Image (cartoon, rainbow, N blue to C red):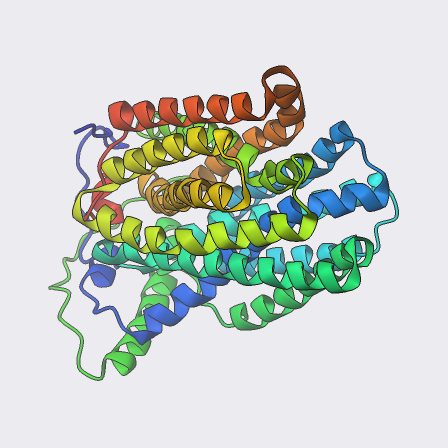
Length: 464
């Protein structure tokens, strides 16, 4: 098993009972489940937006008169914004706290989505989608960082799978809504109405996030033991109330001087103890997200280009997503049983096979069947990747590490939509999916060879 070195070169001893010790002994109650559901809205918003872009790209292109290359530029603009948002928000969240970024990001996304409904040409659409992407990119690193910091080690994978399940279910529902809206209102008005629906979703998400607590682990990483203790005590009170019984004793405190807090920031990612973590996280996201978003962004329009109607392509996407839901739950269970590495590698192999078969599929139901296999792998990858990445980094740079890893993934996502028309032109529809399958297979090799195993280990144990 690959292991990463300690940041100081030797194991660290906690100065008494750490916040992590107090978290790990807590029962998992309805209060933590409520927080998971709130964070699930972050993933739902991201998944719904990108799914809508995939299946609204055809009517947007028709309405605004876009060429294939221009459609690729439009699709890529949101990923540019997400790269900016993820990088900036991760660093900001490590310096000023997670909660502020979590709330602000949704406001940016919601307003930009509403304005996108009134886009009048390619330029206005690209600018507004770029701003939307900044809001989207800002929330995801913080959401998965918070989930890792609030949920005990034994529950992290299953909690992440719940996020992805709710997000995937939201995608299925939104696809059916989009199908109904586009069918009833027509492509030109339908895509604009759907961006209005996204604004309403943003308002709901902003409302439920308003009272989300700040991470006690973050306070501790900043050396603010008083606030860390106060925030942890409030959290324990909520858990105890939901549990209906006294909490287990975390153990005696030891009167030792706490270690000075480490300085957050981009430079810390390249320190002796973090360099290998950073290199692995970045490589993993880059290699996985290039084919992931190449498929996710263009699958709807490619179906239309092969002769399927816009409404049928949306229905096909909804059916594929619905069939993939059980795989998300299974991925969460497998990560807790056989580990992160094997689960992620198996998902990459599954999507490799699915992408190869999908490239040769013809006919509506054959496309749906092999597309479902491909979506099962894609959703399992999302579950494993978002569980695994926050576990790689220490608390003081966790959001920065997750954010920059996702930024590399978003950079790949910018290249993918723009490259797909070129790849289709050179190798055809089938060759495009063969190329995607090869990249997924290479990513599986990287994970198996270089990935550490983090199953059932606390965040503090993983980063000593």
